Length: 507
Image (cartoon, rainbow, N blue to C red; front, side):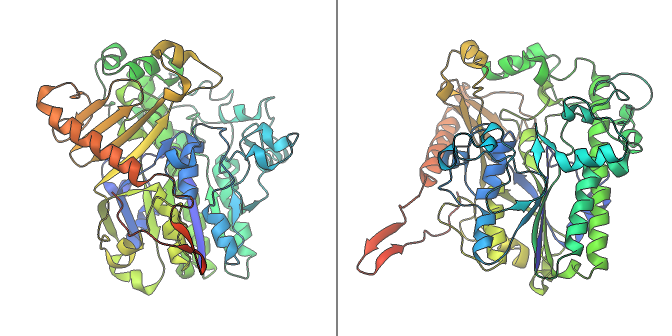
């Protein structure tokens, strides 16, 4: 049996046509969902990429793995799913990136790998070498195809032909200068297909695709697949200034042009059209991969997991990118197709219970009949996949964390009057309410039943004081329940070290 673990970057959870909410077209992922299980309320545990991916690959919440920002080293004392499957004889292979920064305590201080955070996750083999966040095997391919790479290779994503990603003219956004067949998405999928074709033993691969991450510039014909004029306006207040009144952190974020949506709604719709186009290109490329698995006779002996590292604001609340506390940055897709007979009764199911990216590692390990390490904060989703039944004690809410320190830019600390170590927020969100706790700033509380788009902060409303206290206490209990376990579940006895496993209660 094989495992194909697919992640994309910055894919919102509502952007699947099988959900019927948006006009984004994802027929191949819809097919995967029809043969597997779609988790409708799946959430990332952090933003941006490195903190979120560390939770995904380690099964740990941010307050335990402590990868707070892009470039924060991943403590070498922690394991991950690649190391765990390696103990069982598998050799997981990576196509793309995991945004992992090495622990500097474990290598020579002159090691060149300490100058970037694009090293593969420990335990993974790969031929994809990154320089300045750009894959060098794709750079070589582009040069061989006659493309001229800019001095800063990353700029190829946003080309002279397309101008800026928010160019405003014509009926559709301009296309990338890169033809779709040479695009990073298709290049990585081709590399993955070629590798799978060469495997004669059970295999595990992680296909980590860059898009629909910005710049939002799509190749033809995907640039014109969606008419900007038909796309819905964003959910936001009448102006950034009005939006900023909600909270000091939001006011700070909206003061920064890089993270604020264009004031012209037409431009935002054009960005959204390109965003959807990049998604459809990913979907088409994955369709080729799925078809090849079928041709090779591997479709029915391969576990397929599809998810993302985090979402994208795409103009909601006047924000771009991913950050903060709004659902759009953390709600992401999850589809799991188990090829085995025991999953036949759940094919096409859509799960309404909350799930989190920390659940992926335990799920993958259970599928291989491997133990879940003590460090894991998440729990296996296999009961949903095999029986469409939630385990006893399954969570009724989701949690995420955001560390907004900027080591090379102390402006946030100066503006908000807090220290670097106080630049953090924690969120608890269930079906009815959302509570946001800041280390040194006022909290937020949203009544999602009456305010699903999170416009009205009720934290200081006397009618909600009892609920605010209740959810603050729930958040404290969650943190206490998931404190770093390290050796706490081990004790020394006459038989030597013994591990005592905790019961499964995920709240």
